[in-house]
Amino acid sequence: MKKNALSLLVALSVLAPVAAQAAVQLPAGTQEIGVQGNAKLGSGWHADLNGTYGTFVKDNWEVGGTATVRAQDKDDAISAQLGAFTEYNFVNSTNWVPYVGAAAELGALSYDNKNGGDIDAGDKGDNNWALNVKLAAGVKYFINPNVAITSEVNYNIATDDIFSSDGYSSQKAKDSLTNIVFGTRFYF
Image (cartoon, rainbow, N blue to C red; front, side, top):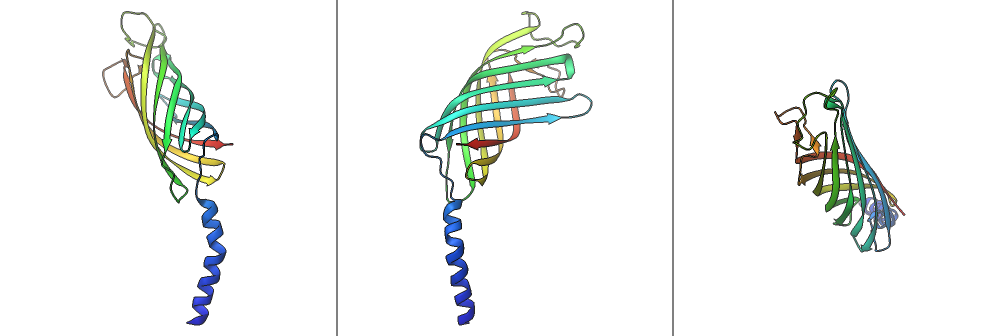
């Protein structure tokens, strides 16, 4: 019994510093670069790619810029958003860090009306511009203190139709989008 207790004590004393180092810290002044997205391959492909750069203005609270590009085979549609975001991270004693965020973006949808099919984005022709608000929630898993992998669900609502249809509805273009993305973030 004493031998087991001594082994446990030695193991805990060796692992305690490792566990203490594993706690994630996102102090004010930390900078973050992020890349995330999703894709559907094959017939009817689409791809979403999002990039972010931000700085933590207070512990766990980040403010920065964001850019998103979406391309879709259906209707030769391409859309893009450019804007600013804020994000709050719920840092705890583990490597899993949940977060919530919001962004305000200017977005556009462009499509090929001749070769791309019968997309109908309104009377404005083949380009739409709109303001977009994005609400996001996700989780980061820190594989080391400077790199995290992320999973996020976000909801976008725009003032006009700037998102190409997913093909599951009769709409050709829409003003809202729910998206699930995966990516990575780098901290320095």
